[in-house]
Length: 96
Image (cartoon, rainbow, N blue to C red):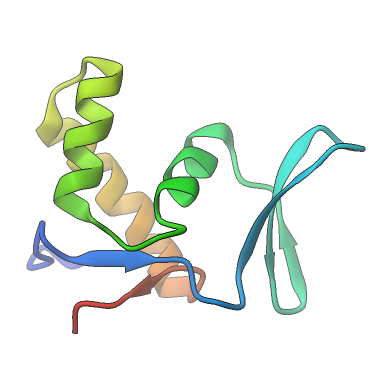
């Protein structure tokens, strides 16, 4: 994600992307057109939180509180993660 990305940027899974738990594999899947991705547990946690629109600031604040970690470190980590997912088109920025 660009350094100028606002902490108030809002992200959401596109309507065509689905996060689903596969009982047979006991794994989470991110289903996107013509692909099935197997996200790691941290990515699954973030994707679950953006199934409904969520701001970068609220994600960082909630995760920092939940994991008792510095909010600025959490924000930097999820900026990189979400930025990569936005680049690939698996996550959508909706705040214009």
